[in-house]
Length: 338
Image 1 (cartoon, one colour):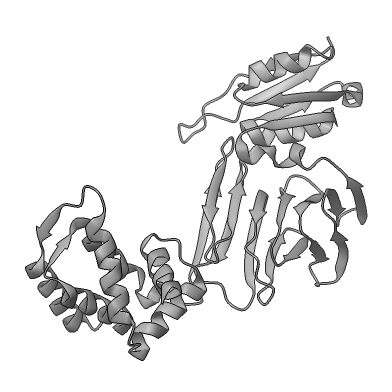
Image 2 (cartoon, rainbow, N blue to C red; image 1 turned 135 degrees about the vertical axis):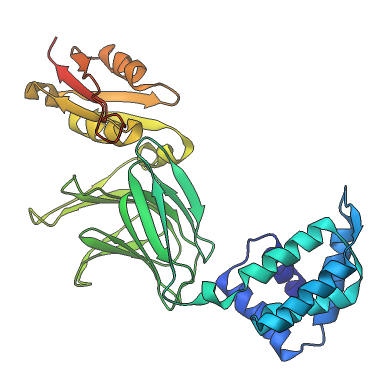
């Protein structure tokens, strides 16, 4: 009984999983004898919430039920709404809002297999989201993710750019990330994938758990261990595998850009995505430089000045031209020997 009530709570707080949805649907459609008590208990919880404002909504609910009959909506949503309306004629506002959410959220359209969601994180920004199974994703700048509104047998997503995943454990339903030239296969773990179209390599960094990296033909490339990075470049048929400090590569999800004796090429690569700019190292001998630094709230000029304090180079910002659509071109930085 308590577990069923937890499912109901998770649903109305919009934290429910795919399994929660089907279990709640089963309870309603099967006429489970506990359902009335569950709805009563949930209503009582709303009633005792602080600042609960009472309002007579009996006429509103009656009209709502009438519209449900006329429009022949999802019978699952209809039965829940009718059951709630039988519990009491006077409902508090939060419960009414929850019912409205239920009415629209359980529209069967959302559960069709051909419905996809796409989230874009613009250059220079970071975005976080929850997936249908409860897994969490962070997108770095100039990245996007595409996934079905409801996962099937396999939990499959596709990304371009950089993303950090905290995957909810489910060994029966593998979690698959398609990223340019690879597929990362996991069940429950934390890992970072970087797969920008303008960078030849795909990077997979495992923070905890275990993942398998496959090529586009589902042939295993390498199983990655915690604390290691796999870099794969299909164009050059190259693979590198090394132990790293994962905090240096996952700090960006909490707003920290960390370099620990990183080569200048890597610093440039990551700063371009972080600040949404272009950086060109004009004098190539500067690529031999390495840096240790942590950026939190610094803007691009402050960051460059901090790097200058440990190495000798000059930088110059380009003049940003206006495009035909009225927007400004991306800021560009030229780095030269001093």
